[in-house]
Image (cartoon, rainbow, N blue to C red):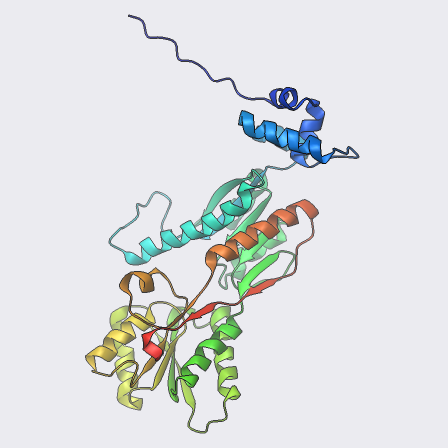
Length: 358
């Protein structure tokens, strides 16, 4: 018995939408593409067109949209990755799993903004060895603007992208100047907030632990500036702090902390400015039988999934990454429409007080 022919679903066209809404094809095109050119449509007509699009499940051809408007109807997302695209997720590496989960939050925030505008999201990973001109060429051919995540201090990489004229929304500390949207946390305020919390919790001899790999980052410099401001807010002669660089590898972190304690004694307060330093230092304090928080108060930074899964009860600062990316995409859409970049936006992280500072 011969197989029955597969039924082909006819693609919904702009003509179908025009017929369903009882308007002209030109009216549908102008309403959907927001390019009226003197054409004025009543609100009731617009709603008929939008309702017809929804009922029929119409999706405009990307090529047709580009021809009609000169736009791609898509936004890019550029994010750093440690491995190539072909590398599998190593489920034994918590840092890699956490990194992928954070990327999911980033994408969800952006997609929420794009959904209402029927825009696509194009992923543009940045990995070692890929020339910057590749990002620029790909973006110019496929998207109307780009959300650039986690720029750090890599001006050599980001500078040419800004100079290319691409419409950018940069999430994180920006090492370059130019016309773009900037969404970032107020790192000076964050450092001031974290240090102030330790001082209010009666810590006086305080160790400020900085990841060695990030001690020259713009964000770290601003956090330390905030630490200094918090100390100036209090007129206590017994209040002092020392900034110490720590290697990222846990074993070396613990060894560095041991040397610090041998020289200076156990600090009353510890503020870690990034990374997984608080976990390693807390483990070493437990070996020393130093009670947290009675003897030592600890504040972490950039609270991530490590805190959620391992539940170490360490006070930390939570960065609203999903909401920052949603705001970046929303502002980027307006930038694409108007051609004018909005003013920078500074977001304050939230201090999550836990048992390490009671």
